[in-house]
Length: 338
Length: 153
Length: 118
Image (cartoon, one colour):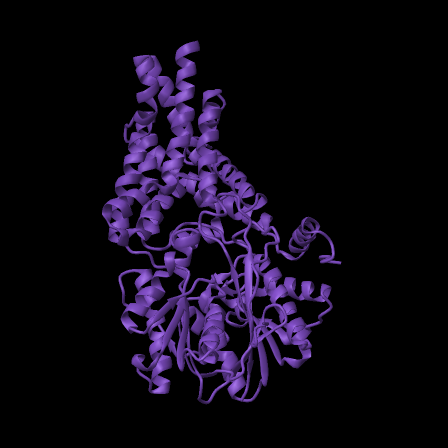
């Protein structure tokens, strides 16, 4: 028997599309100084967030984002069925520790920088499947924990390549519910892991663009929709270069996305003033831009229907040293105004 | 044609690599090299000033050289602690990485970042993340040089 | 004159390092650059090619990490002249002892004194 709520090869269609009833976004000062600065709920002035380590700061960012979102709904953590979260630290430490303090039943996720969209997909499945009434999804990243984990200590003298992106310091959370007001999640296309042989961990746009492309093409083919049926197609953290690569690859598949195609990593920083090179990246990039700016545009009626694609580069710190190629992944979610 | 998705995976990968190469910005080598030359020259000139000073103070050549290294290491370690070294290196690049200042920076930067992992497995161990390989390769080559000299002098 | 030579030779060595950083791919990190220079310096010194540069440029050749390699090799050679085979083992670190100790001690203290700014 074919799955009743699946369409085409990889797309899920929700019969009772869950609503995103509230979101919370917390960011660092660099993000607050960027073009989207006014769209975030909270800004932390101190990159340590009053804690003794970068890791503890990130964990608090994540907790804060969830608390901000819950406060808007007047819900207590006890009224939430599941907490789905992930980050980039080893074994998603920030999420586990935030979950410990929140006390909500927790499913830890790792989808690299695509984690927020992986969470949206899983939350919608839980809700539409009748397993949950309300689910909180969250993802975080911190420039310093990411540098420490994957690259060099923050005080080491290095020159960042022009292809490299800047990890967003922040956390985004969304409360999804079976009933309630807010933009709804109608479709999700779960991406495949796509490896186009890229090896450069300082060029993530190139790593992830083929995966983003694959998921967009898959989504459009599965649903039979044209790109023009979306007011905006927005990827997670391809950055300036990755966006152009994905646009080129989409053209090869016969899709002209042109002006309606952008990327959270492009929107969040001003590369001319902020020295961010290729743009923003990290779990928080798609999380804070989608949960903030994009959903605000939908709620304000400026956008009717958006296709968001969380993008992630799948690697650990050792894989590039071992000569592995770096694959990417993209999860697409169609979000509509209700 | 950027990538022909009807072709086998190997060809797609190659076409994609070429596409990535075409659109990716390259570092501005000339500007970077000029910065490295000027700042690197400045650092070694400061080193020469210290060396001249120590020689004038009556230190023998080898000891004067060693003291010069000690002072430069102190300055680089301090600038790293103050969070200034990485800002200089952003522009100066190899101008501060290749001199002994880069060696000191790599030790302090790694160790500072590991403060929360404790003094032994954090600071103590991570001092040698980059300094370790530098010492290993330098000492192994020097050891071979000494051995050949011993055997064939 | 020695100052001018220190500036030019030191600057040129760093410029070579910059070219190595910019013209190679992402696999060559600052750690590889440091290791490369110390190895090259130790090897050139063993071949007798580095000492002339030191005589020409003083700190211009000593301060770059290739100079550290040179000091290690010269330490091994002096060790052999003094102690024979034992000097092969003791010489390199004896010569570099002050620099290494300074780096460890200052590194340790500054690492516990300051915390990274990010």
